[in-house]
Length: 114
Length: 110
Image (tube, rainbow over all chains, first blue to last red; front, side, top):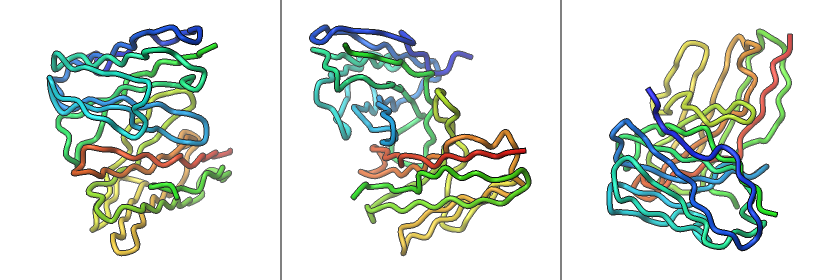
């Protein structure tokens, strides 16, 4: 009964380093998404995917890449980390996109960029 | 102007009180609406969907007014365990993009 699993839970990076945040779901959900949450700003959509092989940009995509090679996995890549990317990152999934579908969230990854 | 706006609070209420949260959204093409709850340093969890006809789930009642682009959440008989941040959520862009409000903090005190 894993649901949405994110790894790592915590990470500290130096400016300019790259890394991949992992997200996996075992519910056969078509729709997956990545958000960042900063104090006072709520969650903001970074990228989303409506199915394997299909991704699109959200509200704040700059500095991040995604891919969706399988239904289960939706990794988020930071190409060259910047202090402005210090945040809490949440991955979420729902059965389908297109409205009316609640999202299930992972536990989050707390990322600090020094 | 933010696409989804909420009063940040915090709301401090005694146990047993009734508390109401309001939310406004700017995109008239918004398709679906939700309230999520987020505990401190935890992930958001769905509290309830919001329908034009209004809907109730135990002590919680949600209302949607499409004409005024306004969503509300009413919590009756507040419990200590209701202390959390309540997030107003709207789906736009054919439903594929989800916009979260910044959240309203609630503290329920004994």
